Length: 55
Image 1 (tube, rainbow, N blue to C red):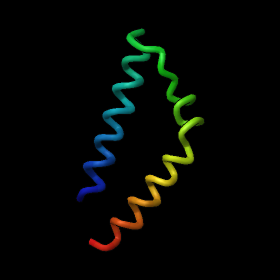
Image 2 (cartoon, rainbow, N blue to C red):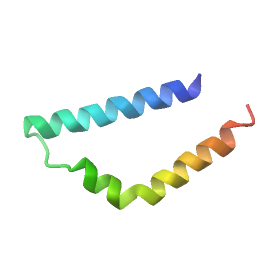
Image 3 (tube, rainbow, N blue to C red):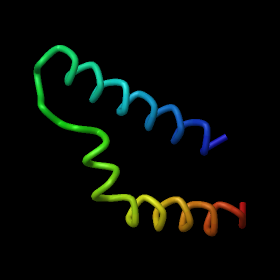
Image 4 (cartoon, rainbow, N blue to C red):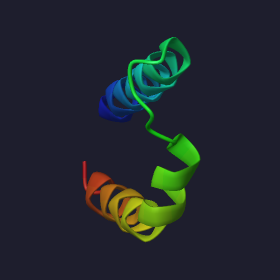
């Protein structure tokens, strides 16, 4: 149940970033963010899976 909320928040944030980029409000490149931070994303996903199994 908790993972559904996390996934929903992630999707909302990605959508908000893409919308802001399309409207010209920001110049954030999602692909550049992912290519820079992919190791941290993997660590966060792995830690979430590891600690989420005990519940």
